[in-house]
Amino acid sequence: MSTAEIPGDLVYQPTVAILMCTLQGEKFLQEQLASFNYQTHANWVLWVSDDGSTDSTIDILKEYKSYNAPGKVHIIHKNGNNFVENFLSLVCNPEIVADYYAFSDQDDIWMDEKLEKALAKLLSFKKTIPSLYFSRTEYINENNRKLGNSFPFTRLPCFENALLQNIGGGNTMVFNQATKDLLSSFGYTTTPTSHDWWAYILVTGCDGSIVFDPMPSVKYRQHAKNLVGSNRGLASKSKRILKIFQGSYRSWLHQNNIMVKQFGSCLSARNSVIFENYQKSLSFFFPVNVYYLIKSGVFRQTRKGTLVFFLAFILGLV
Image 1 (cartoon, one colour):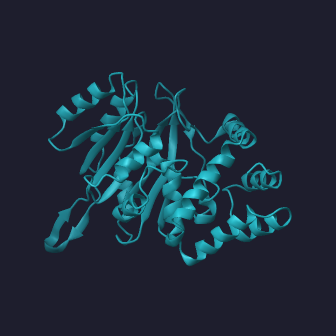
Image 2 (cartoon, helix red, strand yellow):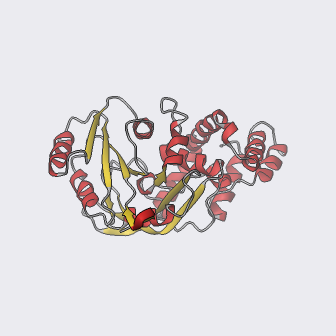
């Protein structure tokens, strides 16, 4: 198990608050909940925010709560929130206090060493600096059959990448108190594109510590009701290109830009310059806009992805 030594040769296990959001999750919820109890790092508490489920989700959660020790599971009832606001409401909840925090979806399965692996990385960073861990995922179908792994990103996570692309799956994210404080400082009523993309932007933007684990930590279930889904395969790539032409990607970037402007004072000096040049690229016409885009240094993880973005930019699609 992951541990941290403290004076007196005592052993302290950091507390992890698991932040889960649910909505009509009865089909797969029990398997995800069971995977928490198999964690090799056992010092966790679960906070669940349900967004008005009308199926048996609440009954499953209450039964699970009864099986665990008092104070181990907390259930919050909400209505009418989107998933981003729901997750961020948990982050902003002052009642939730722990050493580290982990986002969780309702339909995945955590690998046994997920928390232990994440803490082994995060414990090496200063507590005062925002730090964020995320990993690849193993795709599974509705019957738990393995379909493959998520894309193996090789370029370093950074602000220049975060402005154009989210490479951190929220269902794999674990972060420290400094990151929670950073996210909480902007509240949850004005929501970015997604809670995980926002975390990636914020932590990189303020020069926090980022760890991308190339080994999967979560079995990510693929099914018809997935809000995001796989990032591999021809079908997935086609959907992403289609979103460019439909304007979805452009609206995502626009919403994130609005949010970044609101916390501009938190950016490091270097990242402030990057963001300023990126904003200038959105304010001028060709070819000046391309000049500032190149000067900003923004990129996607693959050369092909970056090329597609630049072409879409020149065509006015982003």
